Image (cartoon, rainbow, N blue to C red; front, side, top):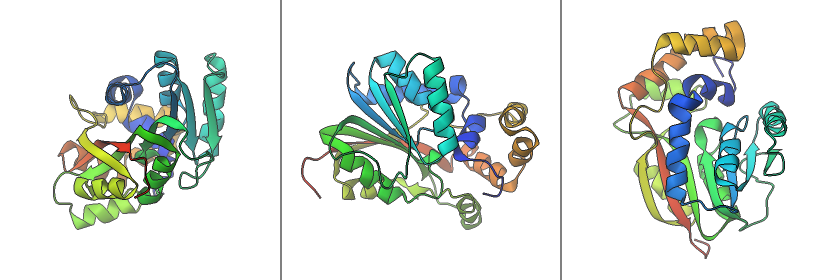
Amino acid sequence: MPFRLSPTTLLTILQPWADVNEPIHRRLAQLSEIESGQEVLWVGCGTGAAVLWWAKKYQTHVAGVDPDRKAIEAAERTAREAGLAKQVTFQGADPVDLPHEAQVFDITIVHMLQLLRTDGDKVIREAARVARPMSTVMALVPSWLSAPDEVAARTLASIGLVPRLLVEWKSVCRGAGLVELTVENAARDSGWLAAGWVGLLLRGWRAAKWTGVGSVMTNEFRTLRSLALHRVLGLSIIKGTRWPYDS
């Protein structure tokens, strides 16, 4: 990765919890119609902030999976400190080969921004595999909202971020066996990335000292923010229902 940050660290800088991340999770919870006691899977959980929030707020059991083993270790520590270790489980695993049996989760969520350089088609197929029949599967996906610039697309690809048109993401979901698809902007009332360079630089310093600050100033980082602020690139929620039969 050109700016040498893990996806988890990158999102800590770009999506501070109170300003950007929590509102997105509130909307995901509304869409899922979550109920106490349900089994939830979060694919691409990073250091577990979302997992712990869901577990505490909705009294659910939440399993988090992420390929970043260091992020998983941090998530486990935070869960113990928060007294939520009995409600959550974390595993470091490949998101295209989930360590779960088929058809076990009531709500399954994929966060593709946490899974840079990962095949989105395979991740969504795996998420559908472990979802119970007629259960909810949702994916947070980077999507082109207008015609992408080829140079910008190559810049994003260099950090492992490969957005698609929404029609393409919907096709992937249908191929995974999801029906009744709906799509909406993940941050309906504001942007999906934090605005303001001062805040970005401060969070970059807190996250990774000079490496974080230098990363914020890279061409890749600036391209990502510019595309988001100009509404060329969006973060979308795709919600579907797992059809009980294989596609």
